Amino acid sequence: MDLGALLLLPVEGAELQLQVDEATGNVASVMFAGPDGALEMRVFAAPRNGDLWSEVRPQIAADLARRGGTATEREGRFGTELVCQMPVTLPDGKSGMQPSRVIGINGSRWLLRGTLLGRPAVEPEAGAPFEDALTTVAVRRGAHAMPVGDPLPLSLPPDARRTRG
Image 1 (cartoon, one colour):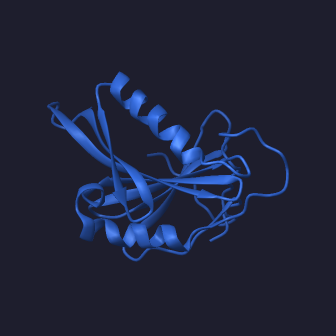
Image 2 (tube, one colour):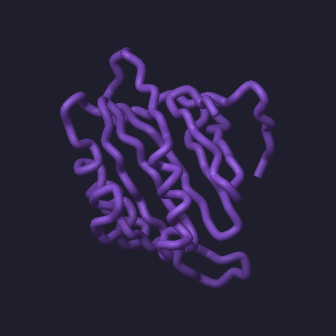
């Protein structure tokens, strides 16, 4: 599926959802959602010879800490990743923790950031199909100059349906 800066293959048992910024109409992120969890993907401009993932990991951890969460670095399939816990209010009104696992993949002038949510964030066998999906993503960076850290443009496919959720 061609989404502009990202070219994706389907993930068996998961539905593709595009998160659209209502103010701008721009696609902000792409998500494969399954019954037990999801993989959200965002792609950013990066320096030609840099390691943007090493720079943004501490920023993500600091942001989580400011909001009452935690982030711990560990080595994973794609290198250093963040294992996170974020306080949330559950549907029944009680407090809980939302687990996530953030993976960064540096490319040529781009950074693909994948966030696993739910069971895939904490159980390797549940996360494997989503991790496999990350290995099949192609990034179309484009030749134009962009500030480091700016999102690469994603677009709705012509046959996409808009829903409110």
